[in-house]
Length: 138
Image (tube, rainbow, N blue to C red; front, side):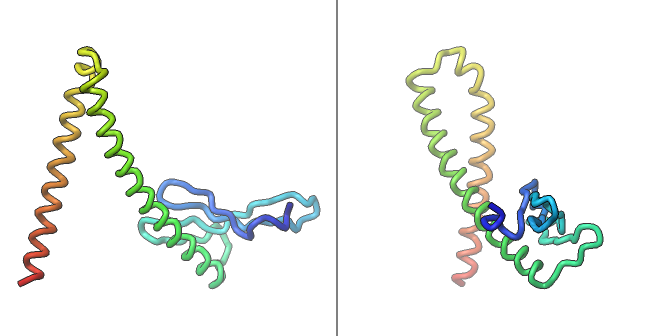
């Protein structure tokens, strides 16, 4: 099993991860995770843990992981939005065909406010894009 393990392990957390070096070369032949750094995806910070000095190879490997993770998170955001559109369609079908008056009473105001908020943001952002495109075309 130790031959199959990666050299580093990333424990995901909000906004980043904790980076561990995987150690299987010890007397007990147990897997040990030695924390070497904490990383923040949002601001790009890499903080070495304790007295550990990150090597240039470790920094490069961490930066590579951060880039892949950022791409994965961006892709998931878009996938979540596509699922949200599916849920909106399913919600409309539910409201039209199966919802009771009590069901609708429970959710209507919250749904209307959420949809109004979303519509306002989308309209404003579209207007901004159109204005920038028109300005660029001048």
